[in-house]
Every structure is written in C-alpha cells, then in structure tokens.
Length: 150
Image (cartoon, rainbow, N blue to C red; front, top):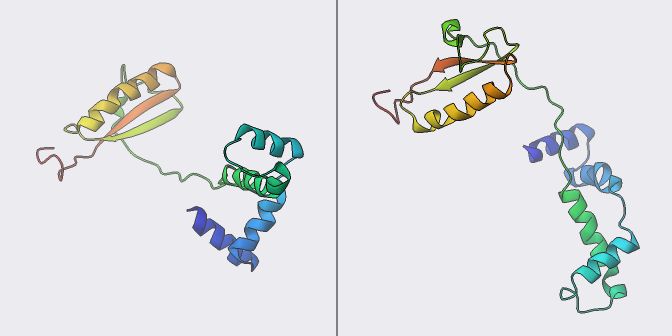
C-alpha cells in the first residue's frame, strides 16, 4: 500500500518516487547532532574499529536513515462506511449491549467456528467496558467450506 501511494503521488507531481522521498521526508528529518553521534559511537564500542572522526558521517547518515524508517505513515483517507442490516431482536438483553447505544458493532460469525466462539469473550468484555455506548448486532455467516454442517 505504501509503495502504491508513493508511486501515485510521485506520478501526480511528475517526479520520481526517490525524489519525492527526498523532498517530503529526507529534507524534513532533523540532522543528527554531534552529541547524538558521539552517544551512539560510545554506546556501541565494538561496532566501530576506527576513531570517531573517521566514522562520524557514516553514523550520522545511519541515524538519519533510522529516523526516516521509524517515521509513521499517516493515512488521511476516510474509512469506508456501509449500512448493514441485522436482526434487531438479537440486540436485546445482556450481554449484547443497550439497544439504544449510539455505536453498533455488527458481528459476522459462524456458530460452528471455534475462532468465532473465542471472540465471544472479547465482545462481551468490550460491551461491559462501554455500557450504554455500544450494542452488538449479529449476522450468521456459515463457513461451509470449513464447517460442512454450519
């Protein structure tokens, strides 16, 4: 996904993906300070068999690359929204949550699936942690390829 987004934006701007990274990422990463380079050098004494001055640029470049790689990609896309139907009769009573709650989780599940059964405790915990705020709808989705009698 990251590569596709990067390629699309680079194409839109008429530059290569590499140049886009330099423009939007590398140029915005703060340069490493002499103190950071020295601290790294002293923290890994067995990694370098040369004096600090001989490897200063290499360490600085490595620290900047690490900062770029550890940066977080923030997607500003709106999450898709779909109206789903469910049986309102299955919203009543505990542990399904308050039928008047503003947030509805529609659970797609298979009665024969052990993984679906395992999710039951998580759903009940979620409903218990947000009383009056979350309700659960249910949609039976039998996985007949895995559970022939579902």
